[in-house]
Amino acid sequence: MSEQLQQLLTSAVIRILRPLVRVLIRHEMSHDQFSELARRAYVQEAAASFSIEGRKMTQARIAVLTGLSRKEVRRLMNIDEAEQVLSNSPNRAVRVIDGWLTDPEFQTNGKPKDLPLQGEIGSFAALVARYSGDITLGAVVDELVRVGVVDRPNKDTVVLTSYGYIPHADELEKVHIFSICTADLLQTAVHNLDADLGERRFQRQLTYPDVPESVAEEFRQEAALRSGALLEDLQAFLSSRTTAELSDDNTEPLHRVGLGIYYHDQQNNAE
Image (cartoon, rainbow, N blue to C red; front, side):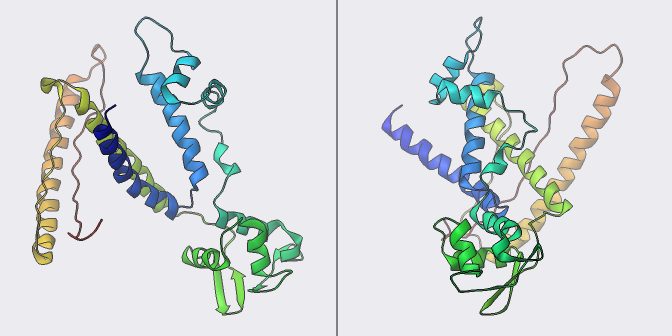
């Protein structure tokens, strides 16, 4: 790989990852958890997309392609998708809550105490020092207040108000939609990197610089109106055609197809 391509690819990866990492931090997924998922994705994609025709894909070849050891490849290939393998490395704020709920020093009659902020024993500072690693007291307090897990009735006291962060059903659905839409867009973009001209999938983007905020809001509304109408028309087309074509004796391969439209807006001076 040329140095120029390496630099461009590095910038592209950071640009792609930053919105994803924003979601992961918001939902308390640590760097260790993400790293585990990244390794698993490397192994899965190498096995699925880089086999040599007529030859069985081996763990040794996957190791060569991914840079992982054969032992690590073997471990990752044996993970059950339903297995909760990521629970071993929660983010550090979560470790503090777990300690509060399980460590007798910070409990009364099996329930978490309201803790004084400072003190060598039985304080929130002692709890953080024991369970957060090298993260500062202020950083942990700020994060737990932000997610609504603790309260500060006064400047010297910390109270546990929730035993854990449980996303609402609508949040779960939003994350599910986020994963599908992002994966579909990336699948199309990656396909178009390698496909011949006649086999490229439709991929277009309208970007217009230096738009005043009032006009940007007008465009947002107009784009939503026109895009919604287009998607409704295409859905009606697919519904009518698939209903007519699908029958018991149809032997054609079946595909999941669609068209995604998204609106983007970023201030000129934003990163």
